[in-house]
Amino acid sequence: GLEKGRTYVNVSLGQGQDKVATRLLETAHKEGHFVVLNNLHLMPKWLPHLEKLLDQFKDQGSHENFRLFLSSDPSDRIPISMLGRCIKLTNEAPSGLKANLKRAFLSFPRTFVEESDARVKSILFGLSYFHCAMTERKRFGPTGFNIMYPFSLGDLRDSAVCLNNYMESSQSGVVPWTDIRYIFGEIIYGGHVVNDFDRLLVNTMLEYLMRDELLDEMELFPFVESSSTSLKAPEPTTVERYLEYIDENIRGDTPMAYGLNPNAEIDFRTQQSAELFALLDGLRAGDKLGGASNSSIIAPQLTAENLTGEILDRFGGEVLDVDAVVELTSETSSPFQSVLLQEMGALNVLLQEMRRSLLELTQGFAGELTITEGMDGLIESLHQNVVPASWARLAWPSTRTMSSWLNDLAARIAQVTAWSANPSETLRVTWLPGLVFPQGFLTAIKQTTSQRTSTELDVLTIMTDVVKNKSLEDCMEAPPRDGAYIHGLFMQGARWNMSDANIETSRPRELFCAMPVICCRAARQDKVQDAKAYSCPVYKTLQRGPTYVFSAQLKTKVTPAKWILAGVALVMDVGV
Image (cartoon, rainbow, N blue to C red; front, side, top):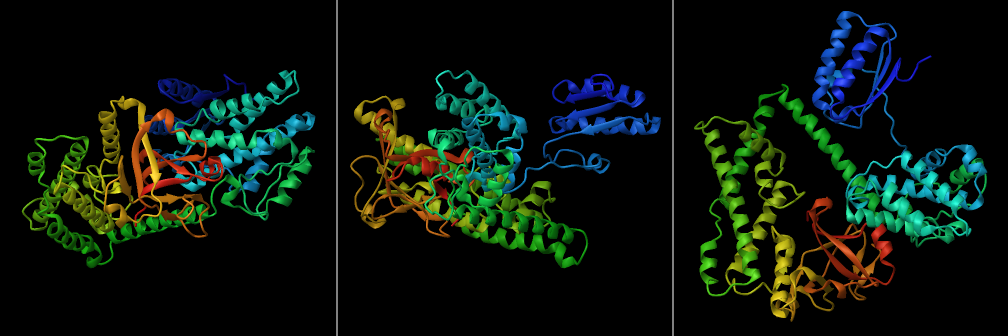
């Protein structure tokens, strides 16, 4: 047999471990040992050396018992040649609630479950369901989690060990729910989580599940409104009966099982289809470059030539007059004027780069300049209807195609131009998604209040009130007494009830709901907390995550926990 540390060695790759791995491989190749190298994706620069080493072993002739095992997370930095010489095995979590729940529950030792008391069995089942909800939510992209986290069965088993220790040491016989939720949500599962809204989601799910009702056949699906979609916590029983219960009571998958709106399935499938067709489109482009007809090869250049002329005609002479605004505001100065100048400067820089790159490309088409790698990239972007990288770096976060992005740019220029005509006043209603730096506009609201009330800026935050019974045109007539009106936001994951002025469940197949005009004003942070309001995150794009702007306070008749688990957010740009 193999002796660990001598004839069988296990190495976790990382900084400085390349020398250790090389030494062990050289020994194993001569003496016939087994070597396991873990986390290959952490050392991509060392892999070419590993390939050369294996080639040397092949030339020298390795011991017949020598074996090398490699493990890695999914990575595109592992050389194709290395993958080609390996026998590949993949271990992926099953898809769907039923398969995942059975897999999670069977990860506990059978004797551990059978010998546990009734309370521990119930909590173990609830914990298994919580683990499945956390892993399955990742399928739904940013609606499920802002960041994808590597939750694993190891987290589930560690949680079960901590649960057992706590229950054994509990003298009062009362389940220490607060302690259990903290360990699961802040340490074991929470140890992976780095986004504040994701951490809030994890803890909210635990608050819903980890309570006394779990011991008495409670509803596991969070805040379900239909009796046809349900999963009750089973009575404590044997492992076989638990598995039978899962088979009998889970007949299909629904986003509602994880607290999400049913429309999340449409969004997930749409994104999945878009990725598939993007892949197919890339393969088609590769075929065209590989041979075929001359027309296929020159098509990208023809498309780029046509679009270059159109874009230059549309934006080539567009320059925002910053000096004129500075002159008009020389006697007065306000935070909003600084925002206007910042916006004009950012758009001018973008427009300048667009002109430079397109004029350079025009000279390349005319034979006056050599086509460079950057020009090739621009041609491909124009042909694929994608925003060129050099433009995107100077612009705002966006998921739009280039044709839609250009229309968006024109609308942004129009808003700033209208504002610059009277820079001493703020727009009656500001299209907040049309600003390159929306945070700057919100900061200006706080600065104005701070100056007027002599309040420290760092104790102020943005307070939102959704305007009721007023259209956009009505709000254009006069500014609010305090703060500023904004519009252009969309709600995802739920909808806004115009008549009752609160959040409600989305209608079937309704992915987004346009929000009415919102009044943003500054208020002290200690006066904003409202248990009946949902602190709704506002993001620039559907990618969420790093595009977070601020949180809006929205009224709700039900507990905010429902909207937290549903991933409800306001999005500035949904691509329409």
